[in-house]
Image (cartoon, rainbow, N blue to C red; front, side, top):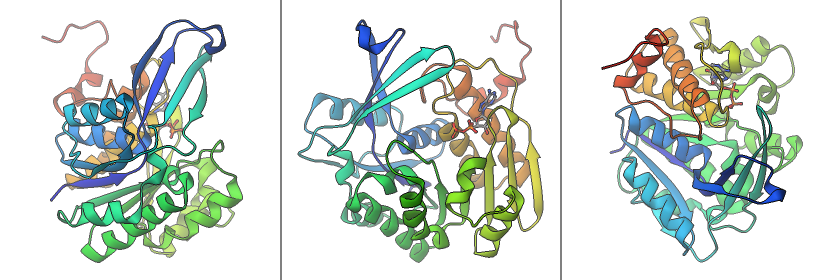
Length: 313
Ligand code: ADP
């Protein structure tokens, strides 16, 4: 039995210093919202399993090797016939990243409800983590998300959903319709302020959170970038400030935040401590380059409390 099962698309990612159209050297790594969460949880000492499809190519091997090296259970990864997707990040001007996807028709987009059922047959996870990204990839991928939510409910697992809207993949209206097919099965809703409207009728942030709680969610967690986060539960509202770090690369902050929050949930921490762990892990992502490379181990969580300039021996 794994602590957290998640599913989605992991891709090769290319990152350079200058403008992509001028050529030059780029570094190759692995990116994917859900695989980032799986790695973050594994680093914090939890067991995590990632369900997805990679292509019969070297980037696919890179994805599998990377996840395995990070301690993520890769036994539910399927090798498909299509190529593994690629994402290209360009640091266009300082602090503003531009993203080009090469993922339409990719192996990752063929993930299906059958892949999810095979993974569940290995045992019941404690948490199933879903994202709006996977819902957007294809009909089979959307079915994989719905199947995961249904099977999670059947085995008593907590269902978490990061709305994670990608306007390059689909319109807000299409996203709203697809999200409505799973939102009633979600226990923990995680979203940015501007994403809440995709899963709740209009109103203030607090009103939207209240609507989601009334519809059955146990927690609505709102990510607020450098302002930290706010969570709404039946017990009330908890606000937690962001950790103060120098922002180097904000991509992956939301996934890191999710890993921290789910880690706190698995540890049975009270809501304020969950949020604080989420903000701490999010800050590690922001303070280091790469989506997941800088994520902390459990021992490293306390590093942000060290006075800058001090040497940790
Ligand atoms: P997303 O990456 O999904 O858009 P946010 O930008 O809201 O999400 O960031 C997620 C979390 O990462 C925040 O709630 C916060 O904990 C942390 N974070 C983001 N930006 C900063 C920052 N500049 N300084 C410290 N922490 C940050």
